[in-house]
Image (cartoon, rainbow, N blue to C red; front, side, top):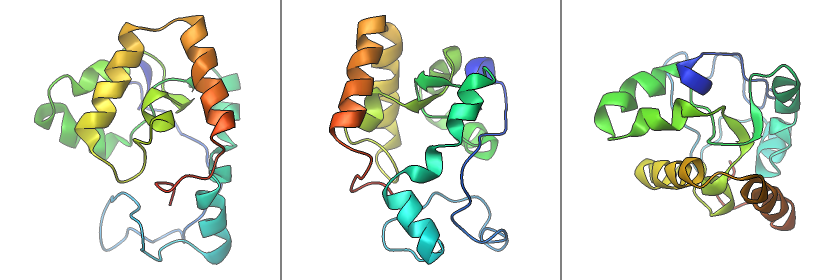
Length: 147
């Protein structure tokens, strides 16, 4: 889900078997689990599985910088549980964001991620986007919370 709550097909390289959530339903990836294939685990550790999202950017569905998109099932779950959660959908979802460059990605505190997303939205500027892009490149794509 991206801008104004619009659902879209976020592109990623497949890193897990097709039916991995058949029995569990939608769940976030967690450290130490082994649902990803060996090659898929490498893609996820290096964040290379995210590269196809540049096609989403070219199609106008995403931005390079912005709050990370969330699957519709999680949007439905969190919109009533977390105050101001839906505010993150006032802008296009991004490949990288303020929360991510500050370590709030993967299986981390969702409320903290929303706090960083809202800070980004309230303080947006071209310079802020450039800072986030530079931090993304400087810190590399490998991160302890990428799995």
